Amino acid sequence: MAEVAAGPTLAQRSPFMVPERAKLHMALTALQFAYAGNHVFVRDALNMGVSKLVFPVYRNLIAMLLLIPFAYSLEKKERPKMTVSFLLQFFLLGLIGITSNQGFYLLGLDNTTPTFASAIENAIPATTFIMAVLFRYEKVQLSRRDGKAKVIGTLASVAGATIITLYKGPTICKSTSTASTLHQFPLLSSLGDAKEKNWMFGCICLIIHCLSWSAWIVLQAPVLKRYPARLSVTSYTCFFGFLQFLAIGALLERDSTAWQIHSTAEFWDIFYAGAVSSGMAFAIQIWVIDRGGPVFVSLYFPLQTLLVAVIASLFLDEEFYVGGIIGALLIISGLYLVVWGKSVESNLAKENAEVSSISENIKTSSFGKSHLVEPLLPTFVK
Image (cartoon, rainbow, N blue to C red; front, side):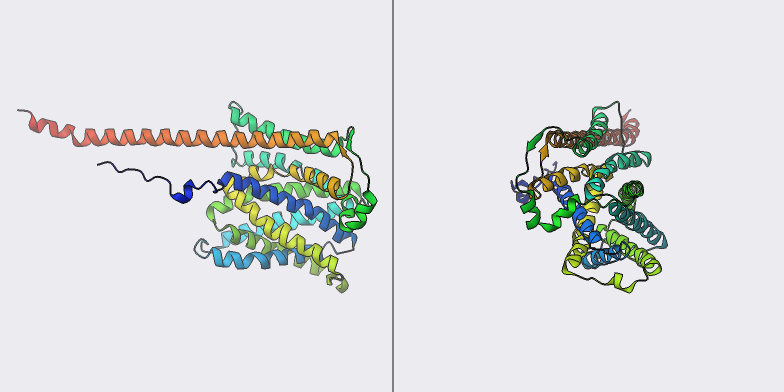
């Protein structure tokens, strides 16, 4: 008698359950809120004179101390045996994703502005997309609608964030109380701070920062296939990043006062960067990379520019322009196109897998029949 397939459990039928795809979108949105705040807090720390060599040491120390207990307790059974190969991979992830990424970001931000740093990060989706295709972690078939949707959506998101940055257009909401708002939120005044030191050098550093981040996102995907303990991978990455920055800082930062935290504001700037922008954000990022792929993660970076514009409009009472609306619509449309394209691609993959499975079953059944039945036929023939 054929077995009846078990239906979904009560928990699976619950209307309150959030689909995993929705969780990924919510996680990535929260991630971009965290990174948008990071531009403000890090710039505020630099304005107060925090050393660019000491800041990342404390930042990654906090992230490491936050992640290690969770990684140790939650992933005891998931961690593969440590090998020299894994250690080298984690060292490389720390070098690219922490040392190069954060180091060049600090140099670039110190010589430009938070708004510009947020805007230039809009190159991350495009560079990540290209790297993922080159390393064959992302498949794009331009002859199919899902392939076209992913390419057009990525370009639309980047274009939208670029418009928000470069094009203003007519004013929609005029500022009425900027001075009083800045007085109430002094930290947010650093959002528009522009201490120009060496703009060209800052731009080059931010470009290297974007390339490092893209490479880091892409390289995490193959590591996770061999080492599926996500929090442990992030912890090892922060650990090696911390050691690398500590070595650089000990070598180059000889002023002992630079290693001291001089105010409560400095402490909270460093704590936010370590706990939220690194610890929490890296854990979310690697989870989404594991479930949605590197391109899916990078696609949300243009949302930062929109969030920075909204924060400036709401809290700093800055004027909001038509360019912001156009850019926002392009970002949302681009996100929708890529998500739709990946959904179509996923459905096609499932259909192909089912067809392949049915075909394999038919071949197996056919082979069994010819092997068992046909040789017996001659014994019954008189």
